[in-house]
Image (cartoon, rainbow, N blue to C red):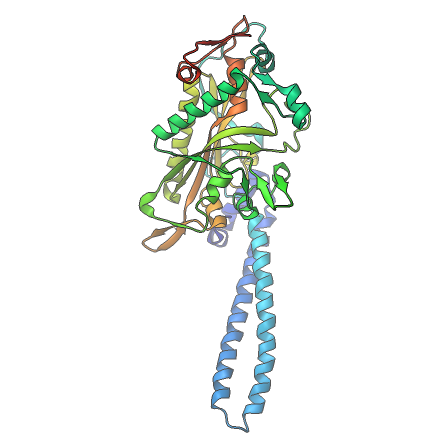
Length: 419
């Protein structure tokens, strides 16, 4: 959630952020009203409790003649305190609801509008020229690497098997990503794919995008759509030593998404699926260094795609296409010859202190404890990256060129040959 002091001190900035996102500005006034009512309820309850204590002291000193009147007054006051405390609880709940309704305040310079207003910052590499390109599924079938028919038979639509060299490609990509992350000083983590409701809510995934999330009602647990969720909850309710910041993790987990609202989109192949594995970077740092940390995560993503020898572009995502937790997000889109366009492979988001406020993650400063900033960045979304590698590095004979950096993890092979 956003800093309530910012809403009180500079509501116009929050309104401007809402406009840039295409969200309702009136939510800011709802929050301000709820804040006023909550503060009034606290003031009233505190005053009544103080009066109650004063009456108690008077009763202890009162004469027998004075005591009946004071006891009657104390009983009435006790009823008022009880009512005021109930009002305080209701005001707290209303404030929290209004507070949770407002997404993070976007950074200065974020393009306003929806996805059509996102801005390409840089294009890297030259897209390969492929005559009559096959798509990744045609190549995957030639290589006996992907089986979506049996995936659908076993689990339903948008599921798949990676077989033979397809399975080897996944393991190779995970090894390459984890090796790079460890070399950069990130701590490798195998993260749980099931989390509690408070962790899912704390990361901002139970708001507008709750329809994307799988919920196991019997256990009241959620399947994560990214290990960002588990990594954000890793330090919940903790005070982090300032000397330990930034703390950087590289988490591997399976990820699950309903893909609600994407009916008819990318139903072919393994680009948009209900289950995939991913290596995700996650960083805890100070609010003051968050923007620099964001650039660092973006640089690591670029380094990984450079190792895969892909042509790509870096995109500054428009405010209306940001998740509720993100103040800014950069996507990297790689070239798919069969589609003649760039498609998203990775993204990195600066969530500032938004998630840390919800999850109560702080650090110490000279003036007390303050929320940390959290950032996340995809290093490798496996299924989509495999799709891109097969598409991007295809050869006319159906074979696939293996980038130099990936060869040590694939037994030194220079090409993947059709079976």
